[in-house]
Amino acid sequence: MKEVNEALRQHLNNDKHFNSCDLYELRLKSGVSYYWADADVDISHDGNIYKSNGPIIVREKISTTSTVSVDKMSVSISTNEQDKIGGIPIMAVAHNGGFDGAELSLKRAFFDDAFKIIGVVGLFTGLCEVSQGGGLTLKLSVKSIVQKLNIEYPNRRYYPQCPFSIYSKECGVDIRRFRKQGKVTALAGTNSIRIDVPFDDGYYTAGGIDWLNGPLAGQSTQIMRSQGGVIMYMSALDVAPRVGDSFYIFAGCDKTPNDCKNKFNNFNRNRATPYVPLKESIR
Image (tube, rainbow, N blue to C red):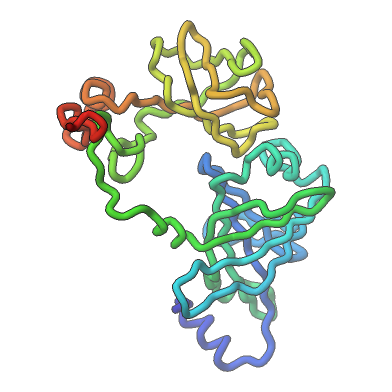
């Protein structure tokens, strides 16, 4: 059930004509959000400015069913070179994987005759999947976040190393304590960079980088090695970052009790079972 304020309730129940527009919030995996409105003027709501001069966004009706399935919505984004994310055209960001793990929220704003907002109702929030992209049009399939419930059950296993992903809810480590913002100072190779963040050898190994701007804006990169002041990716990227590009970098975990205890002070949540033999070794 959608909840609205009393003023909007009265407006929807009593008036026959409505002035309204869609409000879109695109939240990238890095946590950076972009706001757009399908209106002729910018819309201010909840402390955010929804830009009217951004890409043209057209959506289909939200698909819901009574069966066990995932609700979804199809969205087409028409862009030009002036429509950018992190200083890079939206289409380039999509092709570079910047929309992976992104979240799109749709709201509907209603106005009075003076074009003052009466109320806003949230319609849909889901995870983005790029279904098609080329030319000036990007098509997204936005699926309800309940698809995260599609997990293997039972989900508890016994491994020599901790089965939890670092910074996950099960792990409990706050990423903000182990994340720093920095910039690229030099390209050290096809899949490695130097950064302005000092670190000990191995500190960021198995960690990651969330790019904030540049050609990789919105994309996350897994770190294979951090040694000698050089950050090496797990694999070479399709597009190289530029000197001066900003990012968030966060520490990695080797999932051993020692790392969990000494590096993250999180040993009470560690679920490694190094003394339980693997099934391959049981006779």
